Structures are given as C-alpha cells and as structure tokens.
Length: 256
Image (cartoon, rainbow, N blue to C red; front, side):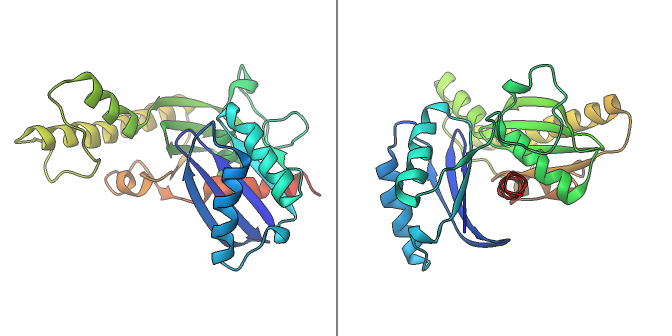
C-alpha cells in the first residue's frame, strides 16, 4: 500500500491507497516542530481504527511546502513504516510534465502535483485554483506543462489580518452572506471577504484567459472550493482529490 503525505502550511494530510482505492485519510494541523514519534503515535492509532497496520505500507511519497517539517516526515516513513519516501521536488524525482517558468526551483511542489493530476483528469489548457493558505491560480498548457500562475492571500489569512489590524473588527467565519450590502459590521465583513474573493476569482480568470488567448477549463480544489465555486460561473469543476491523485501519479511514474 502507498502512504501519500500532503504537507501544507496549515494542514498535513495522510492518505493510504491500495492501488486506486483509498483505504484511509487523516489530517493534522501543520507544526514544523512536531517529531516523527508524535506523528507515528497519532497516525498508527488512526490506522488501527480502520483495520490498517504499519507493515501494510510498502511505499511512500511526500509533497511538503514547509521545509523544517522534512526531517520528521522522512523519519516517520523510515522508522515506523520501513520505507524510503519519494520527495516531490528532489532532482531525482520525475513529475512527468515540463516546467516552463523562469525559476522552476521556486515553484511550490503542491502546485506542481495539482497540475499533474489536473492534466491527467481534464487535459489542458486549464487553470487550477487552490483555496489553501494562499489562493493560487496555476496554468497548465495543452501538453500538460506548468506555465506559471498567480498567488493571492488565502481567505482565512485575509480574515486573520483584518482582525489583527483593526481594533474594532471581530474575527469572522467565511460563509456566503444573504446580501452584498451589510447592515451591520459582521455582515459587512462577511460580504467583503466572500464577494471580494468572488470578484478576485472572476477578474483573474478573465484576465488569465484573455492573456492566454484560448479557451481554458477552470478547476478548483481545497477546503473552501465548494463554497466559492457555487457562487460563480468562472469555475467549471471542483476536485477535492487533486493533490492526492497527483501524488499517486508521480509515485507510479517513478516506479515504472
């Protein structure tokens, strides 16, 4: 079985696959100082609840955007699952698509993994919008190449910045407000965040497509993707499995 680890700035996800069948998926908050032992105690107990054991794991792959967490995640795979993990982004790990940007080494591995899966499932050219800690718009060419993108502050990051910087504004939870015009502080804030991001999405998608010069599919992923996708026609499809599917494909490519 394959252990696929998607380590982001906010959460780290662990998925176990038997072929294409997902046998389990669990998430924890990202903490760069968490040790391999802490991960192991938490993860192996959850695996046992689903009838899985550490010896069931025969391979592992990691996509990590928090460099200080590398050691713990690699140690987890080596010590507790007895496998040497593939690290997406390392020179010896193939991703199977060209990277056509000025500084390929600066592209987040999560963005590349998403594009690999999006090309396999939908075919380019397309735009992949990931609602994560940052909201990213990534471009996949007709041949599957990664061709650049846009990085904007994430929704929850913007909410937190607003709360911290303005003394009289409360912390809010993002949801779709009933009206655009707020009649009180909290509804006004929710409108600004929600409809402001809809404007961001629609504006950037339109500008990207105009600059690219040909029709492009638009795929969204990430926890808040369903909420925002329901409110705009700019997004054509929600795919919550994009990153994990990309990890599966990259692992298969490197083990053929």
